[in-house]
Amino acid sequence: MKLPRIDVDIGKIAHNIQQLKGLYGSKGIKITAVTKVIGGNPAIASVLVGKDIGILADSRIENIVKMRKSGIQSKFLLLRTPALSQVEEVVAYTDISLNSELVVLQELSKYAIRNKTVHEVILMVELGDLREGIMPLEMNDTVKEVLKLRGLSLMGIGSNFACFGGIGPDEDKINELSSIATNLETKFKIVLTIVSGGNSANYHWFKSSKNVGRINNLRVGESIFLGREALCRTPIQNLYTDAFTLVTEVIESKMKPSKPYGKSYQDANGEIREFKEKGLMNRAILAMGGQDVEVSGIVPRQDVAILGASSDHIVINNTKSNLKVGDTVEFDLNYNALLRALNSSYITKNIININECKNVLQIS
Ligand SMILES: *Cc1c(COP(=O)(O)O)cnc(C)c1O
Image 1 (cartoon, rainbow, N blue to C red):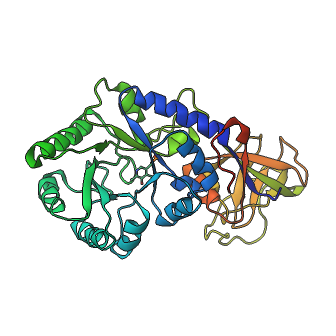
Image 2 (spheres, rainbow, N blue to C red):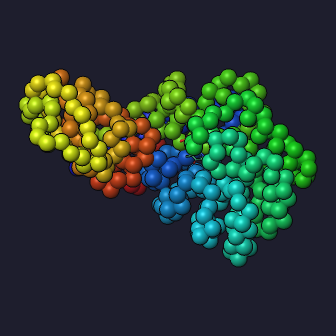
Image 3 (tube, rainbow, N blue to C red):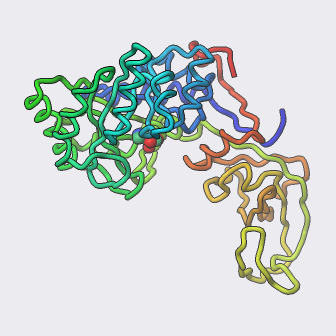
């Protein structure tokens, strides 16, 4: 099979989602599966649906359209708050969107009325991470306006953590979200069916809290696919952290000096690097580079070390493994590296362990 490639162990992903459903379900929290890291890949997404996940969520409308057109049967939620220029598509292709701007909500309403449909919305509340969200003090005024908009149904409220500011959820922040939900319900005589407390960064809060308050939903991506929580990136018990394997090929293997020689200038990345003299060493080149993957986010499973990379090459210290031309090197990927690699047209996606999972659609 063409290299570089990513082996996607669909059995391990199915296992992870099953475990997470059980874990969060034990305190009444449903998980919405977030598909952005897999670029809406329908074969992988179908496993999530097969595991009875009611809603699939993605930040890109293109990914949602791709999944819909491949026949994935699910409700679809748009995670990135819609741009004004997108509202028509948002109403046409998604069931639910996260929102924080009244002007956008007004436009969503207009197109929902035009399409004779009802678009569901979740209002995001700012709780300190400082990405999307309405300031808590402005929630009452916003909800008052949203309730006047025909074609929209206010499904709930939500918050997001550890994305911009690296701020994690804690008991106080979650209590604040819970009481905002309850106050809105009382004040406006409405029912909020979803209170979405965050993402894979909510794991430690969840484990330590006896009472999850009003939180009945989390939007989870990283923990499903990489088996880790997102505050410290520690592995979650009983989950696989190696469902994805990046495989690439050695195209040169030679004894060479350890320190570049000649007059020194910028490298391909615009940096001037310093190297230590360590004598002759066994070096190898891999046929993959910054164009394919975020090189700083991959970790070799073999005993080799990455020395540097340009757009199409990665140079490794091959002293311990003594790999030859044509040998392969396997890597683990972090979330950003996986995101970019799965969205790279140069990397083959190879779904394995398909028999472990009955619900995979035969589509790719
Ligand atoms: C990406 C994203 C998520 C999922 O985050 P993970 O850390 O992968 O679980 C949840 N909510 C929003 C708004 C997102 O953009």
